[in-house]
Amino acid sequence: MTLVGDLRLDRSEHLHRMVAEQLGAAPSLLAVDFTDVGWVDPAALVSLASCGAMAAESRVAFGVIDGPGGPMRTVLERAGLAEILPVFDSLGEALGAQLSHRVN
Image (cartoon, rainbow, N blue to C red; front, side, top):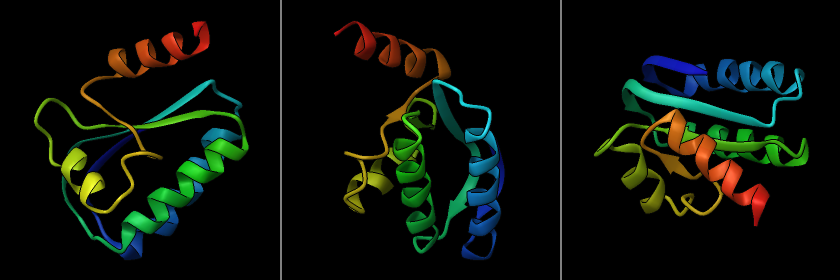
């Protein structure tokens, strides 16, 4: 899933619905690409964490893609969410982590 623009609190319900819809297809991995997101409302991080919890309940690997040096890794670390919302530089890295986790 790719997001573009800003993630504001008033759009976080839309994000939640989109994630729920994607989870309905029972993927093995759901990665939200923040590469083209310019700004994230700190209050919207609660919704993102909720999406991660919803994915975990569905037994779907969930992560954030933000490209090398992207700000989401720092934002999630500072918010204490990096443990439950892993950040990857690319979809390939996210897929590799998922495959590695399955093998181990």
